[in-house]
Length: 308
Image (cartoon, rainbow, N blue to C red):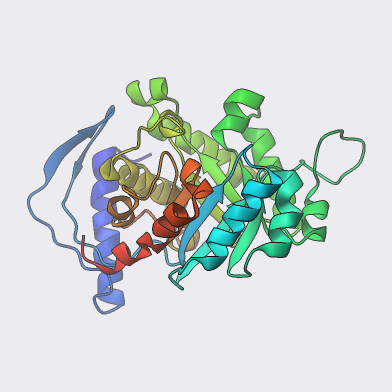
């Protein structure tokens, strides 16, 4: 693996080449490098002025409703989302609890797709309490969130199990939001890259077709805590994950895949985060339960159109 300083230099070179190839679609300035240290990861970086995403796909915003809601509150939230004015160049997905998926699917505008929060590792059968990918397809559910830290650290799912679940979901044409992220003690020990790359490898060992995968970087210390990674912290990890994909999967996957950020994203901080070139969208928890706030986060795509 390249040293962080090499990653930064390689990333800047890649951006410059891409800018030349598309006639200036990505603009980069390169003043003198400065030392940046954030939460145990130290690297030399250059200030960058960017007006487009590093990933070539559309901006992506997912709302993870987790274990929240009643029939009435879900109905009210759907009404708010149906009434919201949303930027057109964003893919939007919401993930209700299993028991409300059908209600949401039948009442939510087609502008927003529906995701499950989990899925079984293979075909259904004698697996009490589980939901199969085939059942998700049967009710028109297009996505599933896998590898979320709450499944990893509360339920106890390991990397390999999650990777195999992702592979089976994809085999049944269910798209995957693949979550990675480090604990606070892992960040403080300088192991952020090691943890994220290990989790990525488990996905890469099982996945052969990345076209229907979105990667969500969610530092565990920022989920539901009110703490949020700074734009620089998030950008650093997103760029490193994209470089890992370039080396370990393919340059084509690294260029096309969307890497989104999750961890206490809200209407107040989304615009600054969205300006970073490797942040291709968001996976939102609590703020996705508030229709107007979620709409603001979706519409933060406009920050991509303004030079950072």
